[in-house]
Image (cartoon, rainbow, N blue to C red; front, side, top):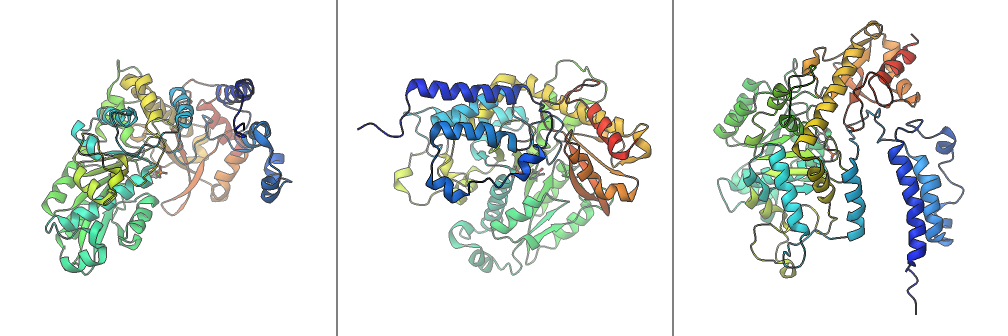
Length: 506
Ligand SMILES: *Cc1c(COP(=O)(O)O)cnc(C)c1O
């Protein structure tokens, strides 16, 4: 009997043609007219067919392809638009998009390393090695590193390893992975557990602390009020020195979410961690790609001193663990976080599948992915990164990150010149301090109150609102390879000038 799920070659080709046309139009003609879908589609977003009806009357393969092209694609907002500056979304580079299609085609489960049967785990391992090189991290970190779902997951990996190390450092028997946190702390005499010292952390750090059982209330923000992306080292040392019934994990950050600023003096922070036996984790979700700028051919553009930007990451290689993202500035599709660590054994202790004989592959150079990461079964999420890294190489990524910085600095320069300067105020007024984020507000409190909404309603650009030094502010986060650094045209900084003038009525 014929398989009812099968499709003939002719039908499949015709459907692919339809998808091909829609994908090409969407991807190549970006930017679309408006970032937000037409109001009519948004209003209509509770379709006539309720979910129960959809299940009862299936529309079949051709029906669903039509539905995806006619209803779903036009109904979502264009996060891949070059003037979409909300969050830190990134875009998708062509090689990464094509590879992502292949990932679904192959439907591989990257779980155990079976080098005699398939090369996919080896490709993933090579991708991690390329990333180490790209970010100037030592290659020997690769075996303790992993491709995760995002920087949140990488922060979870980092805190879970830090927790394990903090307790087993003095007493190998006190493994949290085996005994649980309560018993390990009790036996170590830690009545107040483990605290986390950080400066203006991303919200995902508290979430990670909550998930791994350290507790989000134990994430202690000791940012210097003058420079909130940084520690005051005296305060940091004062707290670290008081480790009687608490031990500390220190979390540094490259790329503070509001200002995009980088924490300084990582080598000095490392020395304090060594002195007081603390694990150093660094959240560099969108900051680590600053290291890509090194591979440049000629010092062309004049808006930036690239060595200075490279040096913003000085000392990151000294961390015990690092969280970063592929799906932000590295411009691969979502589901690509990066985790690097120097502690392969600890990562394995915490994330292994205890006693699963059918998973055992023996000791190899490449750890079974399911024994050093959160999931067991998962997709081949290294492939889009592999494709982008091999297509662009280090020079290509250098050019990409420099483009993002130049675009952001041009926007800042526009807001800091008339006529916009009388209406708006940039938080980091020195262009040379800007990486990829421009934080600003309207001088008039009434306009400032509604600023983000008014900007987004134009459909020409999209920003996220935030709080900065006691009042609302707007963040422009530049992360998409599509941004232009030309004087005008789609995706150029001039779009921002036009929109901010329109919003201010000037
Ligand atoms: C985006 C971000 C995260 C969270 O990353 P996801 O990829 O969304 O999980 C963590 N830290 C910082 C600094 C970020 O910018």
